[in-house]
Amino acid sequence: MPRAVRFDQYGGPEVLYIADVDKPRPGRGEVVVAVRAAGTNPGEAAIRSGAAAARFPATFPSGQGSDLAGVVDELGEGVTAFSEGDEVIGWSWQRSSQADFVVVPDGQLIHKPPQLSWEVAGSLYIVGATAYAAVRAVSPVEGDTVAVSAAAGGVGSVTVQLLRLRGANVIGIASERNHDWLRSKGVTPVAYGDGLADRLREAAPNGVDEFIDLFGPEYVQLAVDLGVPPDRIETIISFEKAGEVGAKTEGSGDATTTEVLSEMADLAASGRIEIPIAATYPLDQVREAYEQLEKRHTHGKIVLIHRTSSADWARIRQRSETR
Image 1 (cartoon, rainbow, N blue to C red):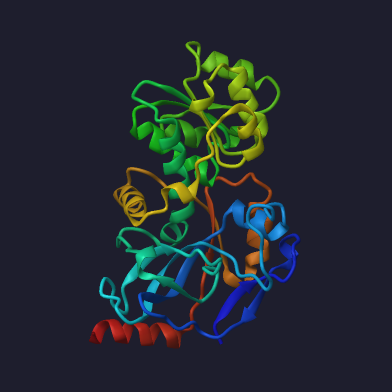
Image 2 (cartoon, rainbow, N blue to C red):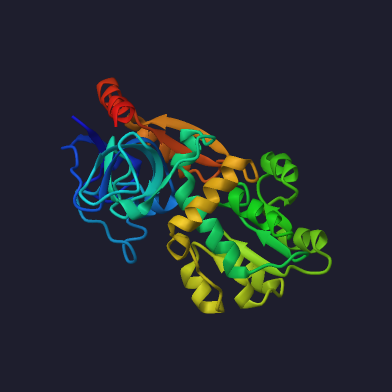
């Protein structure tokens, strides 16, 4: 039977399990995708642990996952933009992408550029939309100096590259082991920890124009202490602190469109931005994947690779070749 990630209660990665499920069937305007890869994200861990229950409560049993890339397996009535066998990238609003098959509206899919690996395609939606929204929120112009916390993480790695494409001078706050990668992208690396404010002032003697926080409220306060105007401070995680100081809190939901996803896919396919892949895990090692993710020290994305049966892939390929 097809498999899907499930959890029946809030808790750590140990509450995750693989369930045998019925294969989904598409309704009108929907597409069934045989999933090849699905990214993991800190927001999913926060939902599963209960830390985000006030904003994003779970209903049990709950599925998991938003990012997805795979092959169109079945079309619902009225779908004309895709054909069986098409390679696609998309997202699920139903916390359901970490599964062998997922059903989504056709308006949540784009065609996958052939240059993209499955790992990159399957982890592109959340980081792409979040980074796009964060950069747009602070609206840097060429020559501005922008500081970014967690600059080598999944979202941070993309954010710093988008800022550089805009011509900004980027200061990336990250552990020293990621400094060489940041330098390779034209980013000035600064180590986090005691004395950070002084190191930022040294790296930006004319001041920091914008600040993007991807880690926690202490960085929002740091931005205020550095004199960054509140409307030039953006956080994707520190909502309460942002409310206190008047910072922005734009995230993936503010940039979730197929147009944005297509733009990010084209940037990645052309090599203008890199989507670093920290690790891949098979679907049945989802607990191990989230244990690594929740250490919060990975450079880039952790991706679940789905092992659809050879019989299913043969059927999908045959449909594609004969359509």
